[in-house]
Amino acid sequence: MNNSRFSSLLENYARLIISLGINLQRGDYVLISALTVHRDFVCILAEEAYRRGAFFVNILYQDEKLQKSQLLFGDEKSLDFVSESMKQAYEEVLQYKGVFISIADREEVKGFENIPASRLGKVFLSRAHKLNFFQKAVQKNAIRWCVVSAATTGRARTVFPHMDETEAVSLLWQNIFNICKVDQDDPAAAWSHHLAVLSKRKKTLNTLGISSLAFSSPLTRLTAGLHPRAVWLGGSSVSADGIVFYPNIPTEEVFTAPDFHTLNGHFEATRPVTYKNLYIEKVSARFENGSIISLEGSHGITELREIVFAEKQNAYAGEIALVDSSSSVACSNLVFHDLLYDENAESHIAIGSAYQECLPDSRNWDSHTKAKAGFNESQIHIDIMLGSPVMDVSASTRDNKQVQIIQQGHFCI
Image (cartoon, rainbow, N blue to C red):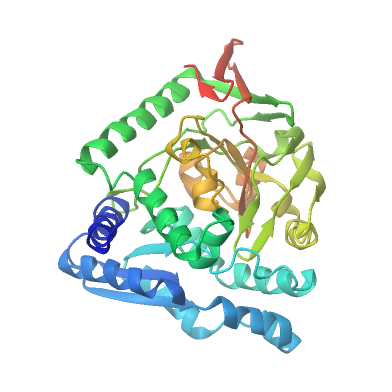
C-alpha cells in the first residue's frame, strides 16, 4: 500500500469514526483516550472533529512503558493512586455532555506478563473503583461513545509473527480498513447494508420471547436465562439526548443481558482473553447458579482470578452476545489479540457489569431491585469468546417452543 493510498484510507477511517461512530454534532466537546503511540492517528481524528464543528478536543494520553515502570518499581501506595487529572478529564466530558472515543489497543500485547498478580490486580481494581462513575455513565449512554482500534508495531508483530515489522504493521492496517469497510467504493452504502442485517437479527430475536439460551460445542455446554423484559441490541445505540451513535467500530454482534442468577455449565475460551493489561492465551470457566466457581487457564490466569474474585458481582455474567461465523472479522482468519476485534469474530459472554439499555425498565431501579431481577452491576466488564464454526445456540421461548438460533456457527433465523 503506497503512502498516498494509506493516507486516504486513514482519513476515511477517521471520518467514519467521527461521523458514524460518535455522530459528532456541531459544538460537541470531544474526549479521546489513547496511548502515546497513537499520536499520529489521534491528530487525524482531532482534525476531522474540528472540521465538523467540534467545540474542543481533549486528549487523555497513557503510556504503557510508564505504566509498566510503576507496576514493577513503584511504591505500594502508588498502586491505589488515580491522578486528579485523569478523573477530571472524564468528569469534564460528562459535564459538557460531550462524546468519547477510546482507541483500545496495546503497544505490546504481552508487555505485562512478568508483573506480580497482586500488583496488577490492585492497580486495575483501584482504577475501576475510582473511575466507576464514568463506566456507569457510558453504560447508561449518558454520552455518545465509540471504541475503535489502531495498528501498533507490537500488536502487528503478534498477529503476524513471521513477517517483517514494517510489512506486519501495513497488513494489520489493511485488515482494519477492510473490516471497517473504508476501502470500499461506497463505505456508506456498505455500512448501511451491514447495519440492516444486524437490525433484522435483533428484531427477530426480540419477537421470539426467549426465556433461555443453550450454547453447545465440543468446548462448551452452557445455559443462561433471560429476564422477560430484556431486549436484544446491536449496531446502533441511542444516547440520553436521543442521538443515534455506534459504540463499536467494527460491530458484528447482537447482545442482551442475561439473568445473572441462571448461568450453569462450562466453557473454554476460543480466543485469548485480552483486557486492559491482561493477556491470557487459554481460559476455561464453570458457572453454578450464576456464579463462576472455577476459573482455569494459562499464564495470566492468576491475575484474572485476582480481579474476578475480588468482589462477588465480578464473578457473574452481564452480557451474552451472538456473532455469525461469516462476520468480517472472522472471515479475516486472524486472531487480532485485541478485544474489540476478537469479540466481533465470535459469540461471547462478558463477566461483570450489564448494559443498562438491555433492560430498559431498570433505569430507575435501585441496586437491590436490579440484583433481584438478575441485572448485574460490577466494576468490570470482561468479554470472553466462546463461539466457533461448530457452535450451536438454541432458545427456549416463553410459550414453550424450541428455536435453533445458530447452527454450526451461522444464524439460521
